[in-house]
Length: 116
Image (cartoon, rainbow, N blue to C red):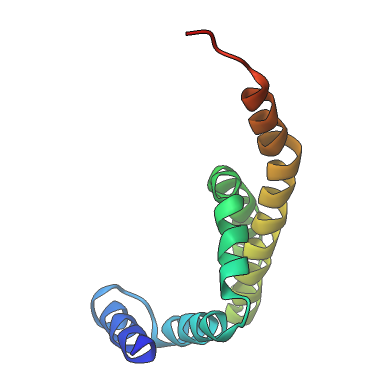
């Protein structure tokens, strides 16, 4: 059921969303690998844990790397690899941001006692 729904969504994205068949194929493979992993909930928990940090940092890390490479090459293979590297760097930066800023801030906020 999940595979057929995934196929329909990717087909609609190709037809109406402006996504190339190559991009849809790559997305399909990544999603299927993600769904077939045995520790699926563990990975989702990790992404949920760093989601705010990822939201804050992904645009800067991706923008810097992708714009730098796009100005220097037109090779699609290098651009795809740059996209993969940008995702990896964004995840690493978000995890570091979570460990150094978000987690201590949560701990500090929980230590504040409010009087009613």
